[in-house]
Image (cartoon, rainbow, N blue to C red):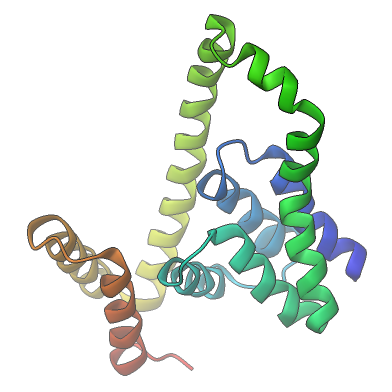
Length: 177
């Protein structure tokens, strides 16, 4: 179990170029599709909770999911697996990266990675939307999305408060216990 937990977070840490947002779809694939530790809806709730808290999203999710699956040791292992790839790469390649940071080839390579991350985030957003439609219905899903957009874009309310309000609304009116 602990080996699977380590792999579930180490692999997205290696492949998730671009930080937490890039690795979230990869974590979802491991946690939901591969190991079946959570449903899409449960993963969405963990993601929302993680977004509401300060700090890196991937490590918060790893800590929570690791704890749910393997207790304190599972939590420590999952968090370690999440940060280990970046830590190892920083230690090993720091000089190399610093030397070539302004290279046109490196900048061009980064341009090719960005669309891939956008597609992964788009697929994840579609999965969340489809799950929300199934669980809560069209009117609730669209209503929450429109209100959230209005609050953040028009009234400039912090996403943290919008996420917390969405969680409270879901708990009060959409509780599917």
